[in-house]
Amino acid sequence: MNESALRKLLEQVRDGEISLDRAFESLRSFPYDDLPYARVDTQRELRCGFPEVIFCAGKRPEHIEAIARSILKGSDVLLATRADRAAFEAIRAASPDAEYHELARCVTVRRQTQEADGARARANILIVCAGTSDAPVAERARVTAEILGQ
Image (cartoon, rainbow, N blue to C red; front, side, top):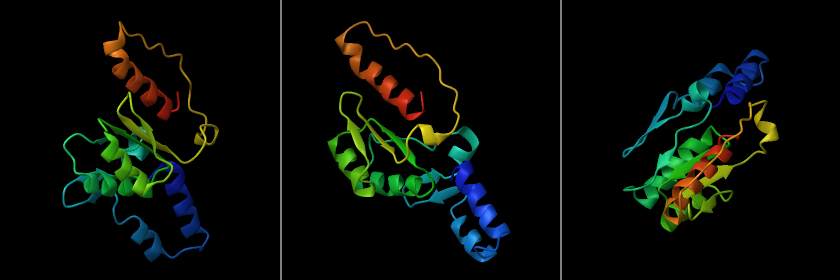
């Protein structure tokens, strides 16, 4: 859950649009969603400005899909690293908005435009690599910076 979603939920309770019980039910997985194979931090975006990142290496595709669904219940963005094609397909099953960055081995989901994200300060970022063997690391840095709003 991000700050915007939490504010909206509290305003809906205040304005009588939803009951306290219904609001409480939507917070049931707060601060984490305890899956049988992973504990997903559903409060990270509220604390840090970006939701938990999925490290895909060693995870089964069905677990990756469930973790992605859990994150995307409360967030409009997602980053998954060390992702292969099977991880991408799993995340795409959770969100058709998923995009695979093959060289970076990352999957991203962005359900809203960067302009809608709010007034996040933009920085000048320089990504430098020494040769083609560094290209995957440089590309992962670029993808990460972009999904973080830079």
